Structures are given as C-alpha cells and as structure tokens.
Amino acid sequence: MSYNLRFRIEAERDLEEIHDYYNKINPTITDNFFAEFFETMDFIEDEPKLYQVRYRGIRIAPLHRFPFGIHYRETENDITIYRVLHTKRYFK
Image (cartoon, rainbow, N blue to C red; front, top):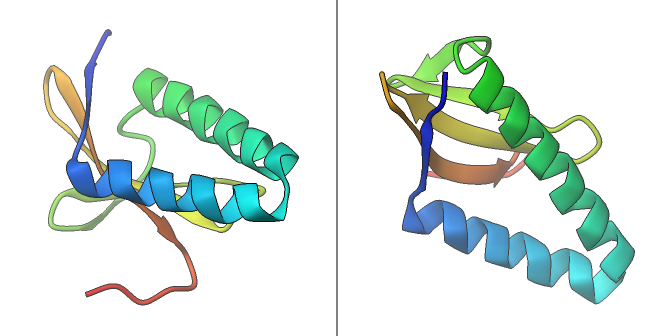
C-alpha cells in the first residue's frame, strides 16, 4: 500500500538539529545518519504496523546505528512523522 508521508514541523526541526550537530563533527556522519533514516522510513512505509504503539497512538521505529527513534502514527492513507528524538534525552 502507498502512504502519504507527512512531517510535522517539530520533526523537520529535529532533522535540522541532527544535521547541524553531526555536520559539525563530520559530514560523513551526517550522510550516514540520513542514509539510515531514509532506509528506516522505507521500512516504515512497507510495514507501518510492525512497531508497537508506545504512547497516544504513536509508534517508535528505532535507528540501529544511531541513538534516535522515529515517532510516527499511521492511518488508513497517511503516515505522520511527529518527532525524530534521541533515545537518551528526556522530552516533555
């Protein structure tokens, strides 16, 4: 099934912050992060119900080499990305 991908503004900001942070260290790390991010996004599109619901209908797909999780919700036609959060940080 084909889903419409939607990114909330918070998720876009998260990705910008991740980009800036890793780019200061080494642009290759940035490239590796986004390669894994898009691989995980492809996996979410193929199997959106694979990850369990964690809170308020939100599922979290972890990245394997980077300590981040993609927080998303799927409906019949859409997958909405709410946040891309570091797994060791506390967010309210």
